Length: 225
Ligand SMILES: [Zn+2]
Image (cartoon, rainbow, N blue to C red; front, side, top):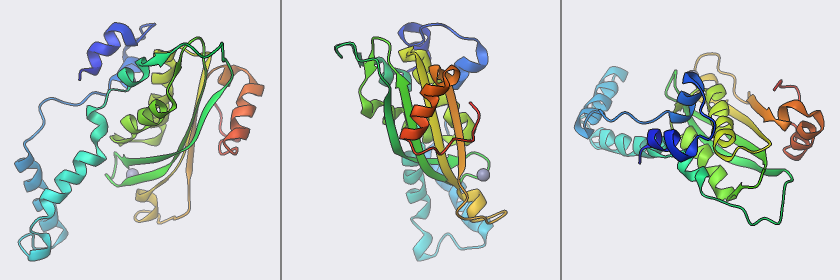
């Protein structure tokens, strides 16, 4: 897979400048360390925490953590642009709002490398082309399964749908809890962070925005676009 090529070619539609384009690319490095190097780094962290990596319970932990990382961070090898490019047009002129709500969101905070757990709501107003709804959920995963900050994650999901599908509007709302806030630091469990990105009609038309927010239960009623 090569996200760069896809964006440069069929995917992007209207080309956009540096920062915006980079949000969509976010591609994996090709010069990654070996698995042995990764496992030895995890062993170092076990030592740093104060434990003995050679005791029975920990001896396989570096290998397990490396495998878990492959799952947690599978998004670096995913290609959201390619997912969104598989669209269909036989929808009898359907042009009303399409909303996928309560998408389970599992990500990791890029500042502390601990989980961000929550849900995402994604909507768009199609113009000619629609995409399978499972693709929207997979796009959320493709960006969530990376090291993230919630604001960037929200923008990346919305921007990629906007650029590839070129709909009349896109809305993304994410509500999530950050373990770096609940299990360390200020220790505030139960606090959710809400972020939103509204584009096109969702940004300019208050009725459209209100309809979307009502459907998803108004998590972002006080959040600006
Ligand atoms: Zn954090």
